[in-house]
Amino acid sequence: MRLLYIITKYLTFPGSYMRCVWEHITCRILKLMVEPAGYMRLDEACGHVEHSLAKSQFAAYLIATGPGFMNFNMGLVFFFFGYINVFQLGITPYENVVMFIIYIISMYIGVSMLCCLFPLTEDILNFWDIAYSKSAKKTVGGKAADSVGKVLGFPFAAVTRLGAFLEKNCIIFILWVAFIVWQCIAIF
Image (cartoon, rainbow, N blue to C red):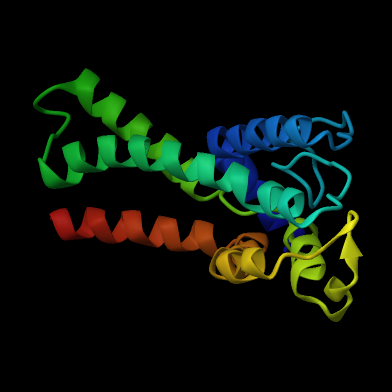
């Protein structure tokens, strides 16, 4: 499964790389140590930045959800730019080859970003441990874990935890490929 994960990360290179950039920026903002091992490695952290775990609830939440949120926003713009023109407006290579290629590339970049939304499992589990475990009642960083933050962050944390599992097992990539194939079949 690890080999399939690495292959999908390289197939979705633009999204994987941008995810790493956003993760690196987030780590620098949060002053987390980053290991300079590179972004696209041949291990289970391929497409992610190797960093120290966050200690506070907010920092753990931000490192788990922030980079994916940025990839999501950029991915939607790229994807819809290509998708609307190709699948909704019906632009074909017979009408304008250059624009059709631009739309396909835009859709590929968008899908690659949307395939790389979720953090490593250890990042979301770190947040989950800080915010929702029984040991979360202890003080975290000098303050008790905020119950308002727990309630507001729960839906995002649950989706992110599920998404991290799906991305780790390449299910998100398979679903996107199936969606594109379905759209291509629906055109004809």
